[in-house]
Length: 259
Length: 308
Image (cartoon, rainbow over all chains, first blue to last red):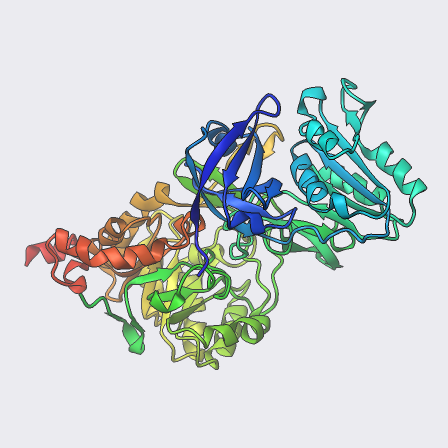
């Protein structure tokens, strides 16, 4: 029977101001696919769904990277190596592996960058065609994990809202440009919903799969409470139907969603 | 210790701990985490005749010792429930309570009539108290005359045991409990969530997509204890208590306030296994406070019991 379990924090990294990456040891969580998440117990009334920033099967370690946005993520960021987390997981529908022959674009925005890195780490070595990475954030310090991408021999194209690093503005023009050059391509993205909506529009003409990993405030994490829904197809007379990020997602195909 | 609870019309629970409606899906969702055979019962998520979309997200918001939700009773409708979830429910040995909802008296009647034909449904919980829908629901639960009419319509189409779930959002919730009992309700369940609101500072608007939501969790427990106590003091039928239960001690508090059984909800999101832990520790807790049996604890704090 599945159950909540405890995992030991091996190491705490600080990838940016107001961010923390907890490297936890777990033979269970390394079974995760990039884009899946685990549901972390915090002192509040709800667990926090955190996607995996890295899945190291050899060393049985996964990364849980959070930005401090409220009480739960603050509590997580204050943890120390040697402490334990209570988790449920891995949960949800992750990314499908890339199709080998198609050009592949990975797009990450802010604290949506971690699952994008996990996808690159999992599948980047097997690629047979071109791969590019576009990362965006509000400003330079929030462009997390760029060194991890470089360590994988990938130089990400960067965009910041204030122009403090890379292109000034959002990732969207960079995505549009790539799409026009790679009509047969495929795309994976994770980031704030407005970014995903714009990426989804920009990628509408791509021949390959467009996979988008969504975020939503979540309750149970296992499909029972119907809290973490997002608007999805089909759109009826009353509007879109609502689907669960926790079990129908977090990764959806662009054609499944309504922004 | 024998924890069996015998309720009206032959409804038997193997112990007094049931999963509360809305927190446990339609049955299969938690089966990987909780051995349903060990629970006293499961009240499934609210079911209407036709599918309901529910409210726009965000649908949950954490508050001090509480949880605001605005799900809006999203459900696939009674036919999908019968087709997709009842086959699973037939494989587990626990009391199944169908929580039923409607926009009109006629819709409550329809869903009760249809689900009454399904032998796997052991009882009904008529939800006239959900604060998250615009039409129906709570408007029936805040007016004793309308509540009476809903219960009367349900009673006319089913011989199964029926409980009515009471709203805490009126000055005197026992008036509605008295009305539905007069219309043939076999039991009362109390309480549903308290209407509340939180503001999202950054968005400068109410935090929930549905603006208002229902508050649950430990924050509401004293309100629930008080309402269970008042209803149990006034109404002859059994009361099923709920609101913020996290431990066997919390269960005992509801029992002593007059509940014969309880439902556990919000805590399951954090600790799926907590209901089973409560069932295991309940006999010790009863003993620790001097109760030799479950029934001895029921209503122990009610004035009528003290006078004996």
